[in-house]
Structure formats: C-alpha cells, structure tokens
Length: 396
Ligand SMILES: [Zn+2]
Image 1 (cartoon, rainbow, N blue to C red):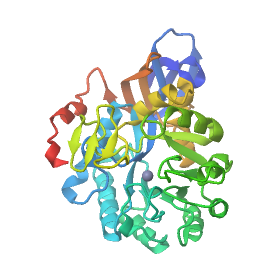
Image 2: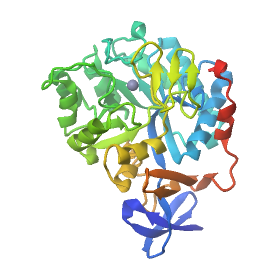
Image 3: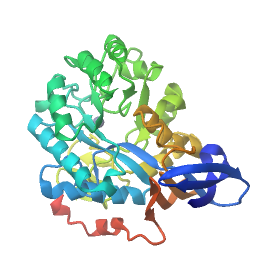
C-alpha cells in the first residue's frame, strides 16, 4: 500500500491518495498544506512524433523510438499517449501499424502508456488548406477493407480514425467503425452542414484539431468551423501550443464549444523537444513554430501536452483545473477510457505530480505514475531529454 498527499486542482482540495496493485484505493480530502499538485496523468491523444523520432515507423530498427518517445513524454507528465499515423500509401500504413503493434508486444513498460493508436487520414479532403501537409496523391475514399488490414496488422489497437465526412463511403465506414468500438473523428475536411449531420448520425463523436486543417478563407457565416462548434453531439480537440490558434481564436472556440465538449492535444511531430534550427524542408523558429520552408504553412506542432496545458491557461483564459481536465479526463471520456483514468478509487494509479507556478503559468513535473508504477521521478530518473541536445540534425 502506497500513500501520497498533494493538492488536487480537479477536486479543489488537498487529498491523501492510497494505492495498491496499480489502482487507487482511496482519495480522501484533507487539510494538508502543500505546493505539490496531483492529477490524473496527462493523456495526449495526438502525437505524430517527438524528440527527433516519428511514430510512422518504416523499419524494425525504429521500433525503439516508441519507447524513447514514451520516456520523453513521461518527463513532461504525460502518462498515456496515442501514437498517430497520418496519410500514406496502404503498404506504408500497414508496415507502420504492424511495427507499432510489435513495439508494444515487445515492451510492456511502453505498452502501459499507450492505450491504442490513431489513424489520421488517408480518407480526408484533397483540397488545399483542409488537407494540411498530408500527401495529396494518396488521399482516397474510406475503405473498411483496408482499415481491417491495418487493424489486423497491429492487433486491433486503432482506437480512433480521423476522416473527412464528405469523403466517399465516410458514413458507411463510420457506422461499421463505431459498431466495432472504434471512435470516428472529423478532420482535414471541407464538409457541408449535411455532411456533418450524416456523419454524426452514423456515430462520429469528435472533431480533430478544430480550427486547423482548414481553408485560409471561408464564407463568414456558413462554414464548417461554426457547424462543428455549434454541434452538441460531438467533442472537439484543440491545439493550444500558441502557434496553431491565435489566443483570441482559442479563447472564443473553447467557449463556443464549451469546456464539457472540449479537449486539448499537442499534435507534436518529430521536431518536438529539439532545439531551433533548420531540419530538411522544415524550420523550427526560436518561438517553436514549425514552418515548411518557403511557405507560411505550419508543419505540425513542436510542443508537448504539458506546454499545451500552460497554453490553454495563458491563451485560452481557462483555469488551471479546467486546463488539466481538458488534457486528462476529457480525452479519456472521448475514447471510452473514463473508467480507467481519474481520481476515484478503483481507477488506475496513473497520476502526475507537479508544481504549478501561476506566473507564466509554468508546470514543473515532479513524478509521473502509470498503473501504480513511478515511471518518472525528477529527483532521481536519468533524463532522456538531455540526449536531445546531442541529436545530429542531419539524421532527422
Ligand atoms: Zn492533422
């Protein structure tokens, strides 16, 4: 039996937490005075890569990247994350998902932090703007058969799929996916109001990084941003890294959607956590913005979810407790994992202990726990992030 005492912003009280066999046995309010905070561990449901590594694995030697990313994210308070594989040819997707599945089978420590995977595309809009940086030539109609092959390749671990409601077969695909327990999210889309209604009818429950993967210019009243913000049957994820959505936009969108239907994601890519510089066709600026060289296009995010929680407070104007909820309980709810993550007896002891500095704000991670195991301790763990300063830029 392990016990710890800390202030829980989600409960607005100091608590004593008991845990045994990987689960919380008691969460009891107390009047301890402490500046240590505790919450469910951060849960990032959209991570393409981090620390110079990508989740789109192409060769068996790269499998260790998933463990490396896991350890880096744990240093940032992220206990759970969802590797995301975006649009590619079918054989590339099949290889990536097979290797991701093997990476988890071979490494139970890493598997404990990864409840499943995310397929983003290839069933999205080919239009400039909505497609973002997804490769146009391999965008295609939704295919249940192809998706089954990807699920077979990775041991049926794909938790959710992002697709465009207007793509051919999207509604039929969604009905089958939802019946199979897979969450369907709308994104990289140029949908009409009818497309949205059809997909929500079919069972879609989420919008992926709402406000991004969109046209530069839109009809001001009738457009898919308003439709998704107004929809009361779907959640929406937002990238609160300070680069993807201007402060006023994030502030207004969180309030239009409502915090009970919102969550935050990092959408980080391989350059996350690396120093500024030029990496192939992408430049990482001092502020952390990733630009495709020669264009104004963003090329993914370089932030982790801890930084996005700070961003949600600083730019979105929401409270520390609400921001933490949007990065923990809300994503768990959307993906059907709410019975595992939270501060209630019986749930997994998957927790983040941290110090919160109002000024900034700044979050400093002390410990990360996954299912009752302390997987990062700032006081003693060797830090993987130190290695990032020695990355050879030509290797990326
Ligand atoms: Zn995207």
